[in-house]
Image 1: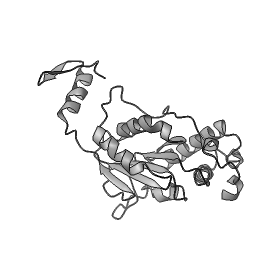
Image 2: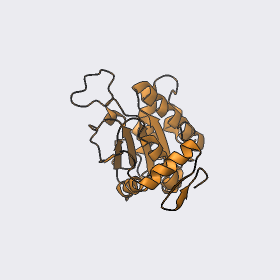
Image 3: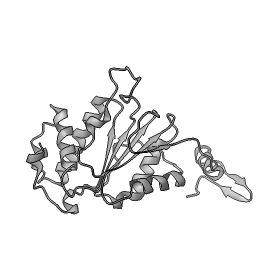
Length: 226
């Protein structure tokens, strides 16, 4: 598969794919966690060599929305950002097929992908996408593996557990974010997403959710506050 993809291009613009979060659920009012966003940026920012961040924490704590906020804020720093749902292998493979179609739509010269059966052998689609991500100089992409809540780790006997390493690009390049409820995923930099510690952030979220205004120490928090 790699041989069929060589020669596709060597410059950054040859690998560009328009930023889109059309398949990602977003909260209408999300107050970004600045400390975590800065930690993510420091961990992922580099020279194009492989950088990985694992966001772990309880379900509903805000891992996905934190990742959405990061992607929006730093989209101009990446040639392509792809979102995968890794709650199970079927969803993951479907995500790879959608990514393959997006790449082909904007990069029709990627002939190694055009021959892939997007509806049949989805393993082939995953392999083709990861081979494209592993091409020389295609180093400025961001892959987001969301909902990796059933990892194949020591002690997990669930036959449906997923080994994420099978679905990562082989070349040591690019950036990866993984969101998971498990504290046992030990790939790259691990960041625990906990409850909000900052009173101001908490009040801002409360005002958005309730539509009411709150005041503390003379500062007003309202639904319209940016």
